[in-house]
Length: 107
Length: 119
Image 1: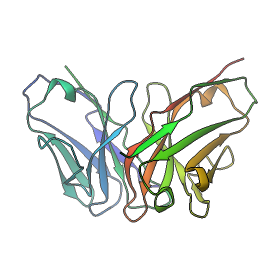
Image 2 (image 1 turned 120 degrees about the horizontal axis):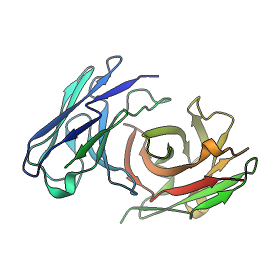
Image 3 (image 1 turned 60 degrees about the vertical axis):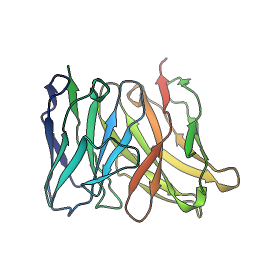
């Protein structure tokens, strides 16, 4: 399996802050990476796929970058609705689609 | 509108089995895989595997091989997760998601089904 490591595991931020968090793959995965947002008690929602493509309906304050083993998700200006847990997921290995451990964005 | 609607919360005793359903609306069910994801209480997401409803071909994560099974009835656009020999450690939220085959994209998710195993 391709292990995915996210950092930090949690961070504290304020409305309006620019936040960036990272996801590292144990082996090179090109741009085969998705990002999800999950709020308490809800299903995850897709934010970004192929490392940098914004899913339909996702606000433009979200952006993704990276390739190979290192990836970042940036929120340019935190909104109150953005306090949530964010997961990366590699989509390179068809038979083992692994998630990172998540980054919790707290007030 | 694309939707995946899962069956409701379940409670079972250890050793029992259960089946969770995931019904698709607003898209051609056989044009996508359905993937299953487990989330233990307070923990992250774990991919369990996926099924192709067009032919019921399945792929399982090694972690879940032998303890979970997937099936699908394409005539009613519904996929199923079967869990056997339930243990308290199976207490979790289980999600289905629409899985785009060519790029492994999970673009729409069910609302989740909470499973509680307790004697």
